[in-house]
Image (cartoon, rainbow, N blue to C red; front, side):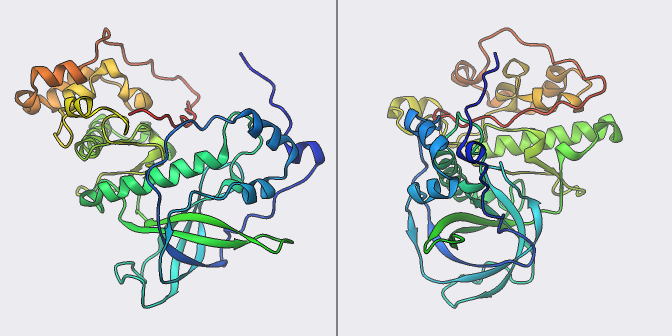
Length: 356
């Protein structure tokens, strides 16, 4: 069923947001920032949020709802925007290519000055304030706190199946025509020399090449899970494909991942059942009954289960009955979805949820 959206403040009064500030040539000064613990709870818009959305300009909403505090550290970096990666209104985060113009002595030398980086800015002002079901401030708080926590836990995988991570920061952005500023949280990561899988045409690849890419995805996701991170949004848009035998794919966007294999408030006995830190065979977690491969159906023209068992037969001896009871699907296996005929299917990004 489709419901008509209520009109936002900007739609009601024909108002607009300030121009997007993350444009080539723009410079910003940022400070190190220690994030809060991963946010939990719902991101659905409350009744009060509905009313506020209809009666208050998005800029004023940002002033009313600053990001979760964390801790601002010493030191300053001056960044210059080089170009867009993904910018514009109605995005949950803004991504731009940047380079470091200058830094104070307090800043670690581990951040490269001779390479372009990607800045991911969690700016709720340019979130979609037109939709009336999501709280943009809760959403960006959750994304920033989860993504930074994930990168810290996945430190051993940096530069392989995930980008190199250069830390979390905060930016004080002046508000046009107001004597105040607003805080924007951001992270700096490696600019990976890859292409989003969503932009690639699977028909340009042989079956062998596609199988190699899919195996690299399964391997990468399994490495994340071995470090107790559940990605939750393994989709072509979050997979970068590289032209390298040593680094075939890189997974991105950990804003809505599960930190740990069970919810953070789970009893210790339940957490122990999920064997934290123990690698789990893809024969269980990527069994076709879970449907994890479904987002890649345009790339798959072979029997998934047969192929999976052939690739990961060597892991079968590591599987215990307890592992089967936890990770083997308890529903009848599903058939792979049919391949689309002409149009490309685009799946919307899922909203975050509190469980793992």
